[in-house]
Image 1: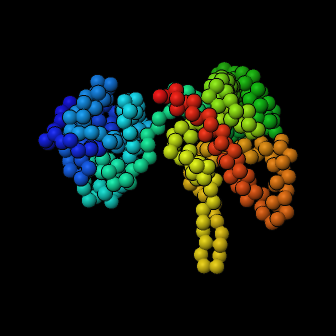
Image 2: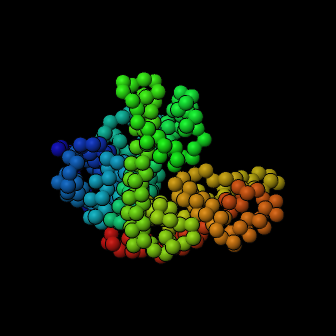
Image 3: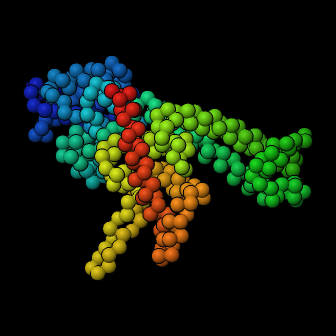
Length: 357
């Protein structure tokens, strides 16, 4: 651990932190952008506390600009938020800036502080409650299991295509569930031949698919318990299951400053149309930005409602009669759903905020 600093000042200061796995580097600047000192800390609670004490000797800390608050900087960001500091998430410097100033940990830390001072970095670090962090972890685990299960099924179907004719004839044309059950019952003979090796591969992949399905079922049960506690009204809304509710809750928790208005939440989810007018042409184009997981969650709600909700189906028929395509109507419906979800989140996200406090 090392530090260097100039004279102590009573001015407001901003601390920028370049984060790494084992060691973080911090640089403090004042409100005029003057470099006040450098501090290197170990990644531990003791190191975080030492950084806080060092910063307090230089002045009143108005904000910490931290790189990688969702990765190497997560522990530091949580500690500083628990102490009541404003923690701003700072993106790493772009190539143009690095060509001008070079690349080193102290330079990156100083640029993080200057990004906060200049207002180019404004996004607050994630500050979810205990329940939101549980949902985030469960969602990540389920997503990984789903990806691996999909990969296993794709491999099974690819092997069936290239299997010997007799084996392929017994497996071809089956639904996914029946295919897995049939492959799970295959028993390869010894010694291995081309056919028995194929049977063994199909058997192992089927067993993997079954294990991952059981894993996902257990995770979804946990998601249902947590979401029903955190946001019962959201879960009860038509088309909103535990997975969709967890996605929306995590998105809202990651960007609390975007919950100030319904339009801001719609933009966060990528369902707000973007003006694309020119001259006498007045039109809007599809928003391809925003949180794509939240956008996908809203899409799933709309699809469920188109199947089970008469009002939604009537709206679809009316707008198609007005000349809109089905995709355009779905985009309109996603915007309406975002408005409904925002109202539910706005009221129910207060509980996690109080829990954090």
